[in-house]
Each structure stands twice: as structure tokens, then as C-alpha cells.
Length: 136
Image (cartoon, rainbow, N blue to C red; front, top):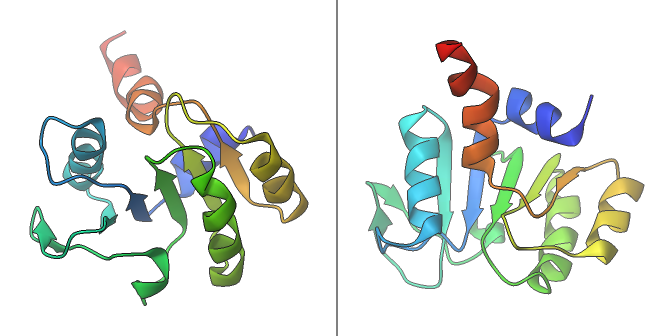
């Protein structure tokens, strides 16, 4: 199975890295979409507070609940920091949003059997797999 399909079919508890409280930002739109679809979403952002009645975490390590998927809205270099945390926490899926890539992290993810997607929008891929086909 391709990593996109594997992630879309198995994700339940999702940490969104860079989930902005600004409704105009892509990270907010995608995070809200995932919440509206019924996923358990953990916003990770530098500011304290809440987004859509969910506590904001400052980093992935603050989340004590089990996470199976990390969706990243940060520069590609930041994936190098996150991959170590993802491995330590036993997270099985790592998704870099549209326009974000890191070939070194791809190799590390493959070596550690982590499903890895880069340069793709999880919301667009979800809609393509589960929603747009319903109309046809």
C-alpha cells in the first residue's frame, strides 16, 4: 500500500505541528477540517491557549496521549528535529504538507518503517480518497 493510502486509512490521533490560531492560515483550515471529520487533533504551536476548544501544546513531547500521525506545517528543516521525537514516541505516520520536503528525513523514515509523505496536502488527499469519489 502507498504511504498516502496507509496514512489516510490508519490515522486517528493527529498532532498538527504549526497549527495556527489564525483562521486564514492553511494550517488552521486543514486542522479544522481534520477536527470536523472526527479525528482527535492535537494542535502544536508556540503560543499557549486553545484552538477550537483543544489545548495548544508547545511541542510534540508535551502530548502524553498516543499519537499515530504527525502533520507538519513548518519549514522542511524542522522535520529533522521532529523525526527523532517521532521515532522515540513510536509514531507511525509523518506527513509534510504541500510545498514542504526533506529527502534526508525520507530516508530516516524509511529506515525506521515510518509511513512518510511530503509535498502533499492531507486535506486534498483525504477529499480525493473519501469524498470526491462519492459524487461520481
